[in-house]
Image (cartoon, rainbow, N blue to C red; front, side):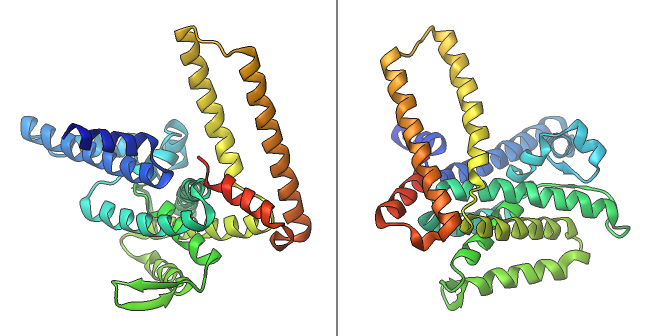
Length: 294
């Protein structure tokens, strides 16, 4: 039993980015469901936890509420309030994310999920404030990020065969196009906000892959933010422990980091000027290796 728990902890904190996304979404859903059950049974207040979660984690359609809860542009994409919702989203994320990581690496997969979620959330807010039909509300769910990952895979590998329910074989672009079409048709339905978010994620995915092919890597900006946060946390942790780097090891680290950055800049400039096919075998292998690194 202890080894099973240790494996879960290791996957949740040290697994690849797809595994961590799955654990984070499922973990938040379990915390919400268990808290709701405990509060409902002990106090008979059935709606207390759903209302609290909606206020704290859901993305409001009102830009004025968003100003007072700016974190919700991120928290909403990891929050689900019912089992069918999270099951559907996690199935899409698992299969499309696994496929995308194989070809583009886990950093790009994570960037697509985050950027797709943000893009879907912003489009949701914009349309809810310019359309007299939609009104006001709030939104939760990983759908925008999941659709971004799926559409990115279909944009990058349009002719890859995909089996639906293990029976029907279609090309990847057909699956993505069908989902986007259903979202367009659902814009006037009861879940208009969700369909708008899907379309926002799909738009982000298309431009992400197009930009990548032109030599501009959007994931670089995301990981600059992540690295800055990481460095702040590690710096404060080292100060608490009184830990200092040795001068020689720190200098060596900086030298290696500088060399890697310079080499990557040269490769990206070459892609921009002459295209991906102009890279040598060694350069392609190096680019693939970097994309796979955490």
